[in-house]
Image (tube, rainbow, N blue to C red):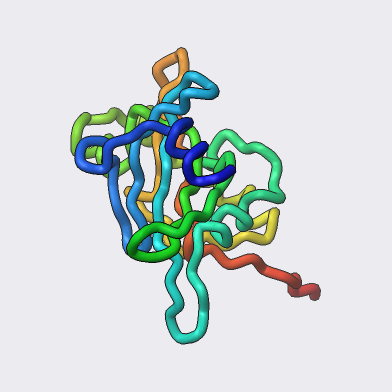
Length: 173
């Protein structure tokens, strides 16, 4: 996809639609005119630190090979464009209107059953990642997105795989 097609497809305002930001990027709520749905777009400048390049492409690749899991927030795609002030990656993922766990805990007083459900979901998500040889290395409330199902249950979605490590071998014995 070229830059103009991307701009025509995904509509967002960087002054009004920012959902959050971290060390390496910002996340925006955007409207996907092709699919007619809201999405989240993570924007990050491609950076080199100590001869290592940090890109959203690597973050997307970290989870691309695994199957869908209800407790993992997967990216749909990633695009790279040269802008006036550098080279940027734009990663597209589902938009979660409940925000992240940090925001949920600040906004609502959740009960024991809800907390238990969130913890069980996190356990299942981490176990799934480990089974697929992915170590997250940055698990914190702001990196856990929240969805709400039709029964009103909160479903945690582990996100932000920028510091994830793919384990290439296992220890036997």
